Length: 182
Image 1 (tube, helix red, strand yellow):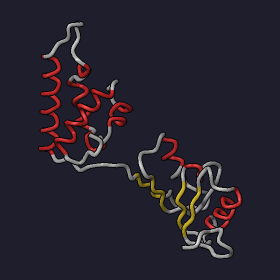
Image 2 (cartoon, one colour):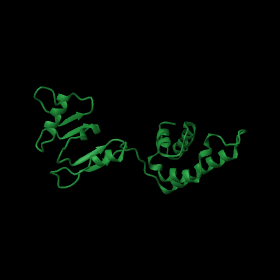
Image 3 (cartoon, helix red, strand yellow):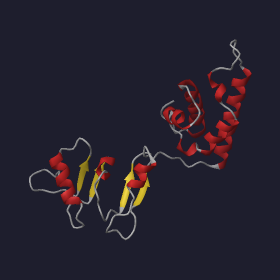
Image 4 (cartoon, helix red, strand yellow):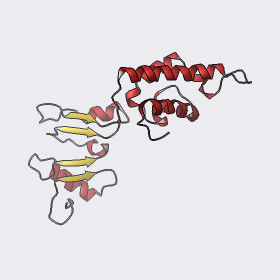
């Protein structure tokens, strides 16, 4: 498919990010903003929405979880000429979890907690997994649809070292079989 800058040819799809040349950014916007413009889809980073008013956007699809709520909300604000807000989709990894899987996950996490509590250390505390408690298990089970990486575990839960996160992620891998990182 031709790119927006290939001579006079205009594609229906364009790209827009912080490293895009200013001349190309201008050409993309000039061909995307008008309702009858030839560019109908723009694959972009959040930089496209910064200070640019683009009316008549019908759908915004996020790949992954936005860094902030502002990022997600700003992409679906109502434009001045829109009758309704744009539909916003988030294509973050997510699994469907059955009740029996949720119960199994909870049971195995409790076993992990119990095994770490039983193996005390000569320094008066348990090993690296001592931070697992009933509240953390409840949070993990309630959010199990979204847990696929150790970084997600450490960023979103009270898990403060990678060994603990790895052990917990191993439980998820055993229960769901869809984790690549383990």
